[in-house]
Length: 126
Image: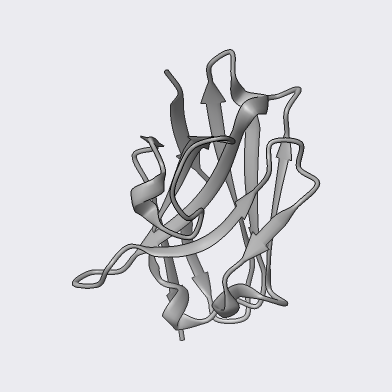
């Protein structure tokens, strides 16, 4: 079992930055792929970023390339999402998710992840 708790969301003006954190518990953290997804009201859950177990490989959605960075500190069992140059369209609830490295399914799909945090609200004002 993996338990995930997100934090760091809030209200920012367009062009500003936020750093989201996801604290994980569980003995197999280093063997998990971690992802960030977001969901705006009335819309489907959308892939944002993912990172390999070691942190050596990252994946960023086209919408976040050049602006978002995902990282992990396995010693602290924590994953981060640094968001810069925020836009109003980034407004959503952001969720941290985890799946085994050898699990099945696309890392870009929320359906492939087994564990989820409660979400943290990010609101970007114009």
